[in-house]
Length: 567
Ligand code: WTA
Image (cartoon, rainbow, N blue to C red):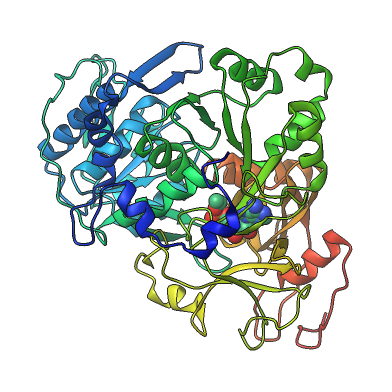
């Protein structure tokens, strides 16, 4: 019997107070995610249970019990406080998937500051945009990433501290840098936990939109209520599970379900800080006897591509439950996983903004391969008519996925961008920006995004951000960025540029522009292809029309072009 029991019964008498009760929380109480994920688990008698098994790049393993996590997060928290960091200050985590990232996250929350995790492969410009928007006070990082911060330091007057967690003790520290070593610091037994309340801010995640720079999604400590219960019912996490979430905490999956959910449930989780290869992943599952595996469609398609033979070389019989998130999970992948692992990957759908899984397949529920499943109990989801923002009256029609605001982990705002936040709400619905249809049994079927954001391998890329990077190259006059189809990543980034007078298209120039933007962006946002054009399609008022370029790449109808500039 799964944790959710019968989905239909749960739906009937659902209230978020189920989660509040299990967590021992009453409205008005102090609620601090950092405390819930460490101190409380210890108080419940699990101090010596393994919380984190970490395998680093070079194969070195580090193990932490819940008591270790409690002490280590106290120690980092005390250090941050000692630097003068206070509640609601933004503290960025800019690290590979090392233990300090997971523990540092909890430490920041324990002192009431706001955790701002950023993918460590971000280039200096992507980093700058996010640190300057958030007004970040401190960055916790590794020495290999510090030079990227140094490059933008002058433009970040509010950034007071760059905390290096692996400093060798010899190299002189540079401006605003300070060294901290978890292994050398004296463990702090007792830390005064900041008394955050339900609506106190907890995490800022930056997410890409169609227009403008990435937006900071502001979450609060009360989000724990839905992260806890969705992990329990959808990921079906149980006391003796060995859990592996493959996501990087630079993205929301890696925090909601890679830190908060497993730790608040007192589960043992494993982290692999190494690049992808089918062999390495299967070896990891075999070695640690992973029972619950939460991953993403691009990884699953890559595993499919690696073939069935390689699966047979490993003992993967520990696997009990598999789930996926981030992009459409095609039915072939579900059928394949059933065949080779003996279980289907269950698709889950959600967003940075929703903070938790909102639509998904559940253990025990009939899985319809290719469908995202049904709304989580307590989530009201509908397919809206794009003109009226009313729910479609009949089944099977394509429309916008709308969610009724009000569940605990819904974002509270976009940081400094109330207009964008309001723009995502219509007629009492939060608009996800995705399109889908619903069948007569209430299953949701994903159709596509309703905007120009590119989802490559599960990572959202803002065309605007890539276009801006291209425009900063001296040869580029105009730029447009759209997606093009790809068998593994579903879509990849393609760039179109027109050149300034005096520059001629060439392979060398293309390479030069690519190298130029690579340093600014992240490898994931990099165009896989570049095409030179004399001029790019624009409306008469000069607005770039990506739709035309997109339609050409996907072999679709171009549609109405009457408002376009004449050639
Ligand atoms: C897409 C990731 C199809 C969707 C947790 C959404 C999906 C965006 C699915 C959010 C799925 C996520 N099927 N598409 N199961 N899950 N998406 O904010 O377009 O990085 O709006 O959050 O990814 O991506 P984000």
